Length: 496
Image (cartoon, rainbow, N blue to C red):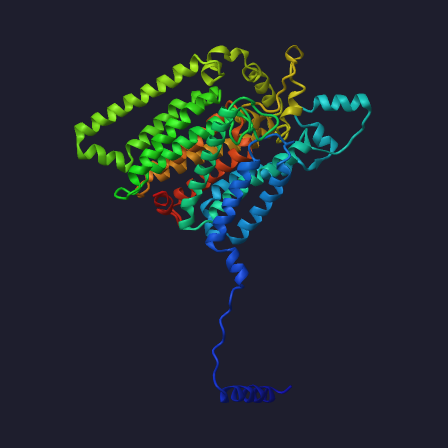
């Protein structure tokens, strides 16, 4: 078609359109359903549903727990939802936490890739398997690096719970961030209340394989419940320390924190957890530091110094007297507690201590490739001495750093070191920031994550979905604070 004809057609159409009334182009409207799904209220509601689901179904680390059949697929769906509504800037705020979890997931995937027979046979720690292949004349077959691929698949799917936790926390807006910590505190209170009912009634345990007769709360393991109770004390003290200085809730938060500690401490002793008892002193010291920096306490000491100090000293004496009374009562009672276990069972009689040299030998034999995430039990069967064979069995090393070194080898060690370095750097960055409550936040988040990590040296609380969710949420919020992102003051002011 000639250019002149094209031009005339364009001009004619333009003239015909200009002759009528001019209409403004209607702006694009986002579908109402999409707006509703991605709204701040929906994000917060989804996060609350996720927390409730993990709290009810995620108290055990055993792969044969029936609740995991629902929890794992739902965790993947929650991850997909979070990735649909979260922004790139929000993901950058939690980049470090995502890298840590993503590295573990990538390691599990690589350990599941089938390897040629020549490559697999050259891996360290495979000599026993090769001897068995020779005896049964199995021939050369392709195998993955993991000695127990089914457990490695289980470990991979288990990581979707902390991954979903991080993404959902990142997707929350400034106003919704304040509810994240409160939701975790609610889970701790629910577990404590269930533990009280278990103490009174002796039942109501959620799992068939559990520490029966102990107040384990939402968990199957008393050590995991004890760590959650210690963290609940820290969280209550932090809420009191970050209250509005002149607000009406300042005194109420201080009173609630003291009441929570008074209720949780005896329950902690009743769990029978020696790990919880050992970590009680540093946790209480952090709680005391936070409570002394609470606005209500500072106001009390400033108004009348000598009276305030006298009142504070008197309150300390009363609290100490109550603690001594509780300890003496429980020590002479017939109930098995952390105190009685501390004096009745020596460390030399504990299988975890007896097997520690074996664990070190395993980590050396499987280094640097590792035995495969989740393959500890399968690998340990070749190292367990026949003299100590009993009805008891070791499904975990009860030492997360050593077990990750056994299962992950050099990459696992690198992930451990990277996580520790980042935790120290992020806590220091928050401490030196210009936030009004920066130091309280740095101490709380740093101490909370450290508490769970240290507990992992003698047990495996982070391998439970519930423990992993709590630490993942705290790590995400620490990452947001350390970057000074959209919640530079939001997270600190969120708990007012």
